Image (cartoon, each protein chain N blue to C red):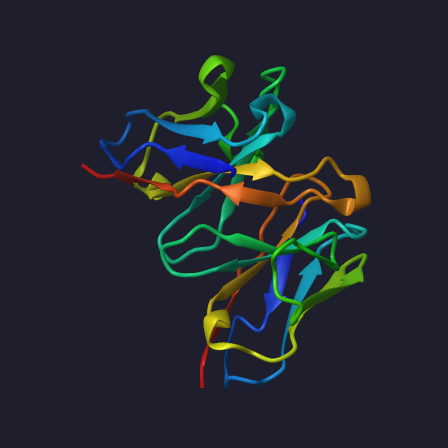
Length: 106
Length: 123
């Protein structure tokens, strides 16, 4: 099974900050990597698919990069509605989620 | 617009089974794979498996093989998840989710989700 790790597990940031979250796969997953945002009590929402493609309707302050085993999600200027938990997911072999990164207000 | 509406909360005893439904609308049901994901309290999502609504074919995650069954009724565009031999560790919110692509341009994400169905297992 492919295992996913994320860092950090949580971070505190201010509105307007640039935020970067890292995701690592236990083996090469090419670009089969998705990023989701989840708010309390709601289903996850896809932000990025294929490592770097922005899902329709998602603000352009979200971007993704990477391939192989190392990936990043960047929020260029954090907005109040971005405080949430973010998960990466590999879709190369099965569909494993990472443990999540909680972004809260500093 | 795409909608996925799940059945309500359930409380089950250990050893029992539960069946959750996911009624879809707004798209061609048989054109998109349908996945089930669960999320225990305070934990991250856990993928359980997927079903091809066109053929009924399934692929279950190893952790659930032998205990999970995914089915569908194409006449009412509804998918079902059944999980047997429940234990308290199965207490979670269960989600259905549509797979948004077939791998072209690396698109194999979950683009629409149901609202979730809370299953509580307790004696």
